Image (cartoon, rainbow, N blue to C red; front, side, top):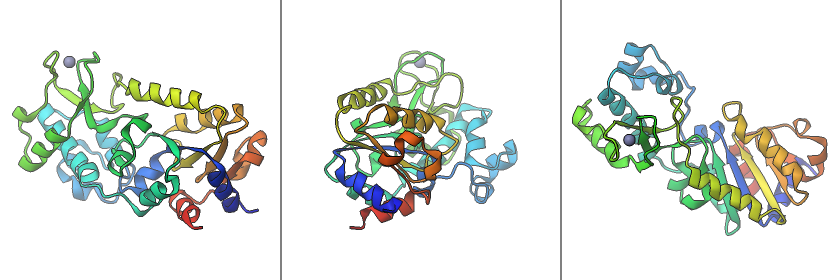
Amino acid sequence: MDNIDKAKKLLADAEVVIVTAGNGMAQIEGLDILAQEKFDQEFPTIAQKYDVHTIGDALDKKLTSWQEQWLFWSQLVQKYSLSYQPSKTMRQLKQLIGKKEYFIATSTFGHFFETAGFNKNRIFNAFGDWTKMQCSSGINHGLEDDRAVVAEFAAKNAADANLVPKCKVCGQPMELQMPLNEHFYPDTDANTRFRWFLTGNEDKRVVFLELGVDDTSPQLLEPIVQLVQQFPQWSYVAADLEEELLPDNLQDRSAAVGNGAAALIADLVQK
Ligand SMILES: [Zn+2]
């Protein structure tokens, strides 16, 4: 049996699917934080002023004012998330999961799975979600939706200080809910739901489906493989790994295909 057939069988036999989706999946959905080709053209002012040439580097940079910061964030969120259309791969993934129970743990922060119609209570955004905002004071004052703010900034297309969102508790400016500085507040409710989901499915036939996980989110790789090793009913299908990288005791219940998420999902949906 080749690995695709093995992956198909593991999927077909599974009662539960847990998707781990990383940077490669974000790229498929149109957001490549490491790409240099288009950044200078799309964000010439930021590129020139701050000497940054990728979205990742620009997100790491603290811009000089909150209004400039929010204008830039809004342009990003508007372009990559509010105008987002699910890719063919995303639509095929939905089809593949069908009516099975699922959970999605992802380092993609573009709100892609929610927009594609997956249940938001079955998604843990490990690296945050940039359609949400948190207080910048260093104290956790809760999460809020930022999409109305984004739409306002994007419509006005100006660094307007009056549009900068403020914390309802302490009045400090809000910031994107992403690990951009030392005070990032992960969604602990979603994390708890994920842990409960794992615990509740220890005895079920669970298949983990790794899609586009790479070095940018090691949390979704090694610890997940170790977790699968602990439960004999669980299996692992990897889009981006080669078989020899998986531990020996997983060989008979894993399929590492190594040709990327788009190719794997396309193969898996074919009967
Ligand atoms: Zn606050």
